[in-house]
Length: 146
Image (cartoon, rainbow, N blue to C red; front, side):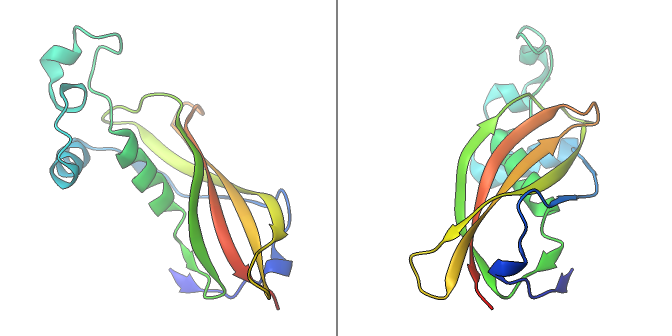
């Protein structure tokens, strides 16, 4: 992780970056359930899940969101801050043993309400080892102009 100043004018529509991968583990399921209080059987009861459509436990969507976004945090931009996330969707299930990575594409730029700043939208796709998109969202940044 390192600091890199990137100003509003430096962002280019369709620029893309791809993260490293991360394998989702049994421990991730248990720790996330403990952190959130979400002990639903869909995530933790292997025997019950055998009777359900996916046939196995599925990862918490919020966990995949947290891991997927965490993978994108490789550089710190002191000229920007996160305004939040829009259009979050859990597209496909993720299972224990799946390896995910994130792909971030600059999809929009516009003027911000605050003078001297712009808004940048990063479209984030979390993708499994089969090349399937499992989660999508838009990350909104408020970025200082140079």
